[in-house]
Length: 162
Image 1 (cartoon, rainbow, N blue to C red):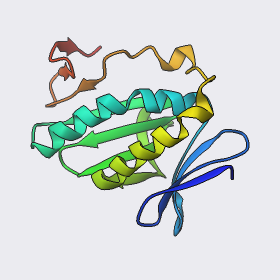
Image 2 (cartoon, helix red, strand yellow; image 1 turned 180 degrees about the vertical axis):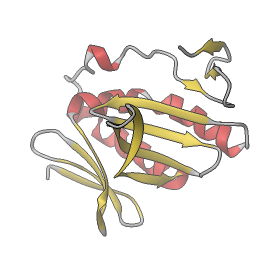
Image 3 (cartoon, rainbow, N blue to C red; image 1 turned 60 degrees about the vertical axis):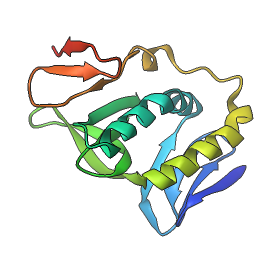
Image 4 (cartoon, rainbow, N blue to C red; image 1 turned 90 degrees about the vertical axis):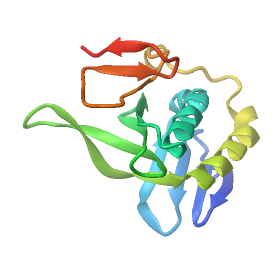
């Protein structure tokens, strides 16, 4: 492991020799997220949007934020649970629906703040890496605030879902 930096409790971020970034709980191997360097860049580029979703959730505004960062990894924040949930999803073959897997890690908002400090420390490791073009298609993440067919983007514009 080239780097191993604590983000609180038994959680840490590590960077291995292949420049994969691992966010992990030392006590439970299932509690982890593993990003390629390109996925990590996409994840880091979403930090301001994730922070906006956290602010909404903290102020008890309806929040249902999810962003895909590649490799079936998604980051989710809702107003129901005070966590940044980084989790692998899969397509359930019986009805082609997207579902959560058990592989992932939920960070408290305090651990999230520590993670952002670590991201700043690791910036130099990824200076020459660009996110894959297919990971950049979603420019304005959306916040679903009800079960209707509309959501509000972080920029406050209503957008219809297909």
